[in-house]
Amino acid sequence: MVGISASLVRTYERIGFLPAAGRSPTGYRRYTEIHVEAIQVARCLIAGYGWQQALDVMRAVHAGDIPAALAIVDACHAELHRQRAQIDDVLQTLDRLSLGTPGSSVIRTRRVVRIGAAAEIVGVRPSALRFWEQQGLLQPTRDGTTRSRFYDQEQLQRLQIVKLLRDAGYRFDAIRAVLDDLGTSRPVQARAAFEQRRQSVEAASQRTMEATSTLHRYLQTGQ
Image (cartoon, rainbow, N blue to C red; front, side, top):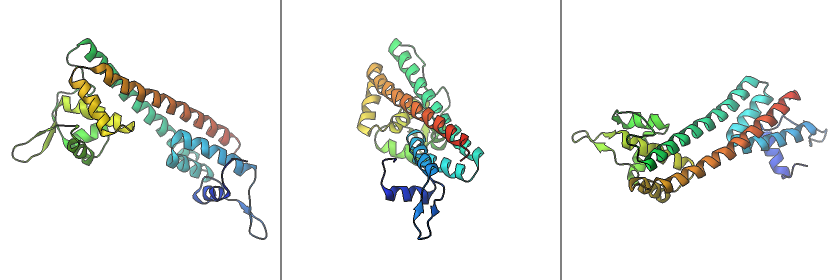
């Protein structure tokens, strides 16, 4: 009825996508329309929220913890909003660069920060910054004595761009090409990469909205 294998149905039940099925006297599982609906809802949520978030939502719903389920949904929408805002910031910066407007920056700060603060600004671990530096994407200044890394406004801007493109699945060679375009005053080529990323976020937003609508209908049934 839902176009998946019997073993996957059992897996969905075992891990919590479905409420527990009843059993016949001989031990066979008995699935009802409720389980069919739960599978359909779960698959829509996976497409909209991601596998782990969808599972957490369905587990919370079947445990009767609706506030926990709604909190996960809110977090999914908030993450898309954050990504969209970051992309819009980058695109505005690239527009300024194309017009020759000085002083534009995705991250507007005059501070020079250490690696921990730089990582916190974009939401990654310091180890990611070290690895991206090894790949030639970042060039922080180093203290002559302690060899500590310091990131100025230009490096923080590069870091933001690297983070966005990595989130979009870009390989390191493609990210270098974008950074090279920016470094040689060719923001038009760099802008195309972020326009594509924004389109993918818009598509994800549509899937998330559909998932939320589907979940709402499921909750209205009292499951």
